[in-house]
Image (cartoon, rainbow, N blue to C red; front, top):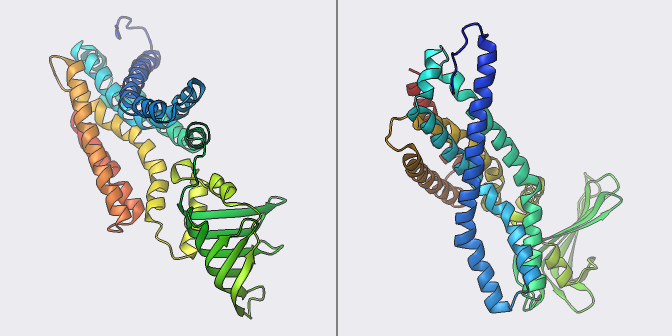
Length: 376
């Protein structure tokens, strides 16, 4: 591509042409990288699990197609950052090896202006990934779980679960909220039960805590608990009980079906569950790490662009093979740091927000250093 063929051409027009050219080249490489990385993840994970479902449960073709489709959003979401890294490395490596970067600089265009379209794309991908991770991935994960549990495994048995939440909403306002630390499927018992009843003003007016609640076949019965009447802010009444009906009309099967794993929750749902669990003095480090990763992982697309652009300009004989090699090394380092950060968050070594942002902080520092060197 020629950039200085017409001396009368305005610099503004040349910059616009350059922006579109670089943006298009990086975007096309980004799409290629998504397909390449997705194929690797699908081939090494999704297809293997599908083969297991066919072998162990005799999964039907429609069910297999469903789980394949519903697994794609979760796979694609993880490929966004690494795809931006590879796209930046390949595009700028090719532009450098073909002397196009030299031609641009000879026209008086600085490195920062050359890198701007790629950085803009990295930012757009990060924002899009956050929205994709919030609105598409949780729904797809829920649909995936339902196909596995109800179509393939045939709902063959109830499963025990931790952190059970039951909500009763009337007219768009919450009336009752039940939290249980765990559900034992074999005994059909909820342990560590807390019931909160809300008044017309939306505030908690009544709290009941019980050691456990068991399903009798028609209703839930709480055992060994306390009732707190806190409708009056200046007066609290407490009453002890041995047994009492838990006002939940859903049976165990319905309750478990409504439960969501962290991967199936939106950020709003995660915040709500964290706040609820904290009122019960339950460790929420795992959920907090999941919440903050909903932003930190998508933002890695922008950070990888800051790293990939200057690295792509390094002189190499074969820009494509070098780009692949560098991307693999950088991705390995990033995900090693992410694993370490998760361990720090769940082990409460560091605050969850700081822990999950460790790889991004390292990436930002590395990107700034590389960009400064490349701009000299």
